[in-house]
Each structure stands twice: as structure tokens, then as C-alpha cells.
Length: 204
Figure 1 (spheres, rainbow, N blue to C red):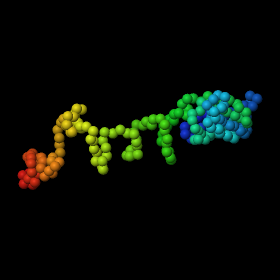
Figure 2: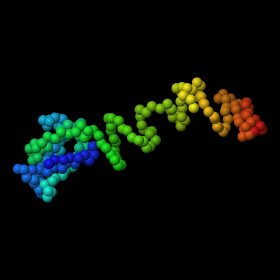
Figure 3: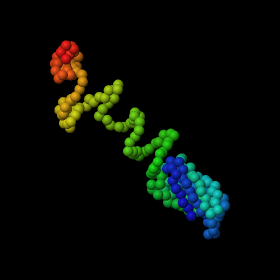
Figure 4: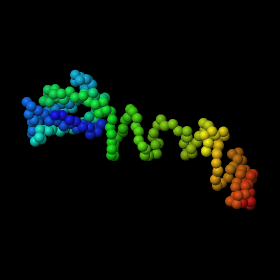
């Protein structure tokens, strides 16, 4: 009997054994096991080798947790040696070391290095350290800027720098970029002042 389960695809592997000697289970017995993770069913191409002393319980079942944090590559086979003799070569499923499914919280105290994709419903944080993300807007000294084309609100075909289809509600002035004292102001009573913005105090 032999069974193993993943505890964490990056840290350890739980292994359960129930060794037989002459067809008889061996309760309360100590065995020396070696587990070689290989790329060949001939037990060559060893990616990781781990030794474990396993003591069976009263039912002849033994348990071991194998550290696989230094596994370099994806093994296809695990060669199981008992007391120095090859007992069996196990074929490992293609997804055993490729996928890790977490149903609760996963707490990582250091970096996660991924060569594939990381997908999530959402990411928390300000994203300031994320790279390779395409955005139309740029952060320029705290201001959101866009210089590569026109901006449309309520339209997918803006013809001007800012094209708006719909109503505009604002408080303040529409000023001339060259002469800040001239522009358009709408008074609270609806009066529109066009020209000299210094007239706001006397005409609004």
C-alpha cells in the first residue's frame, strides 16, 4: 500500500506507506525510505532525493512529510526505495506539481516567483509595484494625463481634445489658458459672464 498527498505545491508532500514483508503487514516497525523524484521511469534524471525514517503504527501504516521546497523542475516519476532496495516506481500526474488549488487563505512570508499567469478576482493594494500593465492614463506629479489622442465622454468617437455628449455640471470658471483673467463664468442665478472674470463680484 502506498499513498501520497500534496500539502503545498511549493513546500512539502505527505506520504503514507503500509509496507509488506512476505505478504504480511509490519506494525510497529522502522523502515528507511528514499524517495527520488526523476524524469525517467528508469530512475535516472534525479531532480530531488529525500530520505525518511518511517515508523509504522499498530496497523502497519507509516507517515512521512517530504520537503520538496528545493525541487528544481517537474518530475514525472518518483522512485521509492525501502531499506536500500527499489520497491516501486510511481508515475506522477502531470498536474501534481504544476497546479496548486487554495480554498482558504494563503499566507506567504517571502516572494512568489511565477513563470506562468497569476489570475484573481481582484488584487488588493495600490498596484504601484506592478509592471507591464498598459494604461491610457499616466500619473504626472499626481495629475492624471493623456496625450495620445482625444477623450470622449458619452461618445466613442471624440472629434476634439475633449468631446462630451450630454450635460455638464460644474462650479468655477472656464478660463483662457493664455489670459487667466478672461473666460466664462456662470453665476448662481444663471447669468453668464463672458470676458473679464473680475466682473464676477459686481455682476453675479
